[in-house]
Image (cartoon, helix red, strand yellow):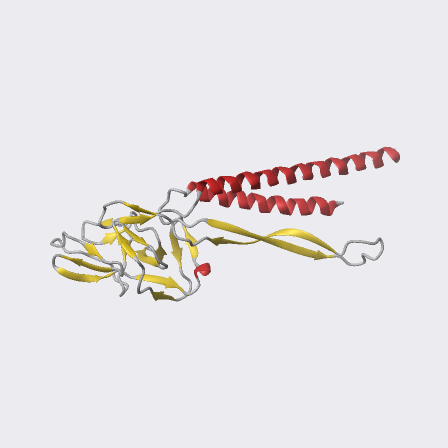
Length: 246
């Protein structure tokens, strides 16, 4: 039946999507602040009518790619000794100013720009609790950042780094490997457990991801063989019908 090939093809498309997501996770296993992606599949039921004769049937279940979601569990910390590297041990995100507007990130690899602005590798300024770029004076040489984000130097308090949480983390829109756009409101995190001189690594577990990839690849190959066999069966049936009417 044609539906067999259609059902199998829907599964192939889903498995290909799963393999793409796993490959992206593995590629970003060494990207600080990266959060692993997961896929969510479900059945899409096609109701059949007039199934009393012949008996059987009632519904055909196709595989549906429902969504891709992020695993927001924390990654391991790596201590770098760089006073501008920052890691969050609790919930929340840093906010950086990009040409497209404010974006959230867990990637705490920051450095000092020539004008004294603390920024990420792309030059996006780290924002404080007031939404302003965090900036140091030339005389601020000994930088200390406490667990709640308070920033100070030998010249006294300089401000507080803004750490926020989105109202619904699952509504965050990924931009690149570690940047997110929050389409909803955010609130300040009062106890983010910030660690100076460290970065949060990716939460991807490479061995587990490779195991998932091998399992999904086997399923992909199995379904591919099913589609090929079904195609051969249909072609054989067509050939026999053609010969019988020849």
